[in-house]
Length: 244
Image 1: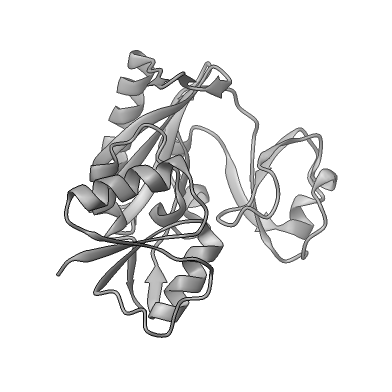
Image 2 (image 1 turned 120 degrees about the vertical axis):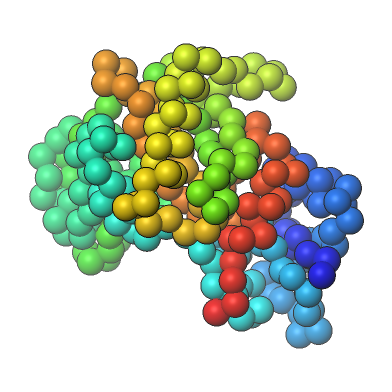
């Protein structure tokens, strides 16, 4: 069965790179002109890569369920993987927190993920929406790992000393940080006590003065590639959605 890579109308460097990789592998590729899926569109093995809300709309129309980590994935990880306290709470609870505190939405980007002077600075959204709260830390370097069946298939640096880890077309790698972070990720993937979806993106890095730690986890169908090999990413994307 030939997979069909489904892209949104929004052109990005990532979508173009995946389109080229898919064509080179003999896949079908469809860039839908809008969020409305045509009634006669029946791809044989749909593979999604686009913005999360677009993916949800397409998945619902095609009878698919997008796979991703649960909202409490990071808070449930043992401290040996997070190296900091991370809690899941409601927006109402988060607004009562003293600061400084790092706040982010677990999955949907409902508000900016950053360090807030206090929880009272959160923008207005429903009080029962989930929020992740963590102690602020300084990341020396961060890396992205595309994982399928508990094995890293592609990886790339994306953050280095407070800025995007890129100079022109070159992705900059702190090799010591990369080695330490990869060791942590491999240990997590081999840990049978940690539940993982068959396809997931894990971001991990090195906290200044602390050591390697998991930054967060995300669904693969909406995650940026940075410098990851698009050919390997395609195989991870194939496991990113299943029949509902």
